[in-house]
Image 1 (spheres, rainbow over the protein chains, first blue to last red):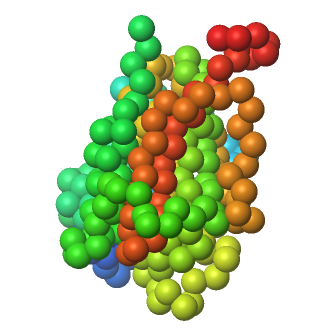
Image 2 (cartoon, one colour):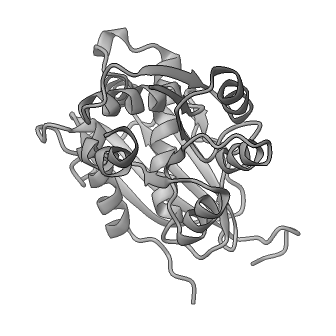
Length: 120
Length: 158
């Protein structure tokens, strides 16, 4: 499977990559995006099987990326990995079509719970 | 009455962050006591706007910043570059700020992080300190501070 990791922090992209490995999801093709616009563009061009996206990013927020993808007919499985997890944001994520919202800090077990239904 | 974050909240948040990313094996926790010598070389901050307005700051010594970079990037201390410190401290402020925001009234928005690596903490006019956590990590100083704006958007006193 191809997984797109979208986060404006290189550190966090690395942590997500490491946590995927620790959670047992090895051997997947990983693609990175460093802002919302790039996340949208690479989702369209690279056609990943799953998008793991930060919420708060330059140029376009993660939820704006998701809404634009859905409005253009792209139905890729999409989940948020973000430092904020208020009920309002969870509702907005669900309404936009996200499968899950994982809050930072997270562990390998948190990733397993969210990703096993998709990657397991 | 608005619920304000407390130093106890900051301790809980910091403990979660340290156990997840900075002290995974449990051998070097953040001690909730001020370092012998409080040093601020690097400060990362995020701003909160909306129903509550203010800032969350993470300040530390240069060495602590490099330890954070090494831990988050999974590289050796001596291999941590200045840009790594900026990225790592910015992400730390983002994570801690996001968790602080979850304690605040909605709706609020969190800014992208700003990082000062010149020894200054940045300028935060018209604010009052809500709480702060002085910590020691690997014998280096780390401080988390929550500041609330005292003026409304038009500049009048809140």
